[in-house]
Amino acid sequence: MTGLEQDISTFWTLLFDIITDAEKRLAAHMARHGLTPPQFFVLKTLIKHGGRCAIGQIAREHHLSRATMTGLVQRLESADLVTRRRNPDDGRSVSVELTPAGQQRFEAVRDDVFNQLQALLGMVNDSERQALMFFLSRYVELVNQLSPGPATPPQDGQHGHG
Image 1: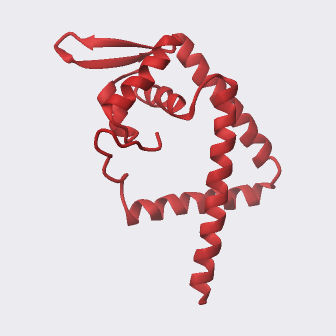
Image 2 (image 1 turned 90 degrees about the vertical axis):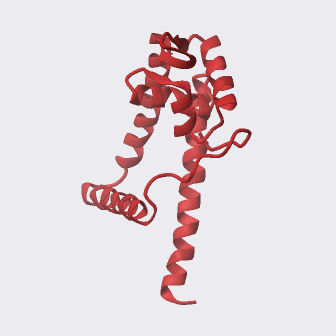
């Protein structure tokens, strides 16, 4: 095995371990606040879009079918975290709006995650932290050069990670 092949194998293992750990920790934070990961990501998308977004746009951003997104939004709506509004100019178009309770729930999860990251990054010195940020940023930069943007969204009935 060449040095590059060994590095690829090691990188794959480390990346998989990081992703698996992050998903478990993030899901635990969300669960403590009564959210599933897909529900949290809907709230996060609404935050990104200023608190309001078309349901179809949210579905596309998370590579989910409209039907799947509608179910997610209905559950969030029943918890008073979002509201749905028909577009008065186009009765087929539905906007999802973040409620104050949804904003607070998102912030509570985000604050929990940030507190954990602060504890984690507080365990390394400044130069290690700067090196970590540099290499993570460089990884993202290279991945974006290799393959800009996400893959094509799945068709109706297929599910993404969202």
